[in-house]
Image (cartoon, rainbow, N blue to C red):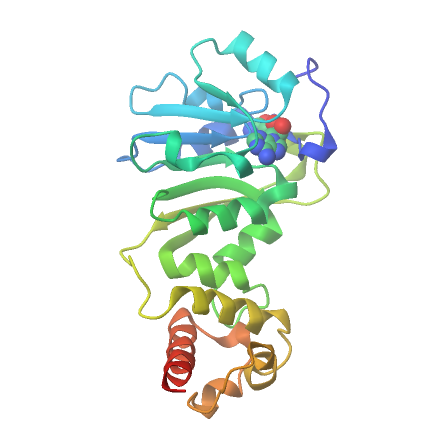
Length: 258
Ligand code: SAH
């Protein structure tokens, strides 16, 4: 573990507990074939995946030093040197692929938004995030941590909080606890509404999450007339995906009528 000095700006916290790495690797669904690891670092998780006959496995790592280390220690690894956030996802596998990783925490939300945007290409995600992010993603309505990513992702994924991981099993230890979650694509191919407007409604609603929707949705500059009062009196954090779909459809109807 001494060979590479962790770089904070890349969110590097190397996992030192092999049993946790193995447990993350085992959490991938039995029917997964194509698998991409984000940020393998020094390969603690990669080790359990790279030579598995089950997978067509690739990894993407941004850090040159880690890349050199991986080439040396895992010569069979199909490694892309680059930034996951810039990777053209259509080019890596000929078919949909699962994503796994002990992710760089500084870009957790961006990774999850990318997953959301590419949901039809990514049937499954298993990975470690800061506990707070993991809880936010897995939260349901009424929960304080329920937010934009919870709604957007749960519209298309079944989300499970798998287990919590203590900070002392990382080098260097992060300031916060971590947690492993699993997202599996549900059967929804299309929401029953204008999806772009849905995303806008969810984002706007949570932007001022303490306000009732009647006030929080004002920046949309659309008439809220057809929306049931019972929904408008609530805050975004109290609404289910279905509620947001209902609101989106009402807005759509009004704007197409005018
Ligand atoms: N999976 C390893 C490393 C986790 S630390 C382990 O569990 O020990 C996060 C890793 O993500 C680091 O190796 C870091 O260099 C890499 N990383 C950070 N930003 C990245 C990006 N945008 N694309 C790909 N990898 C990235």
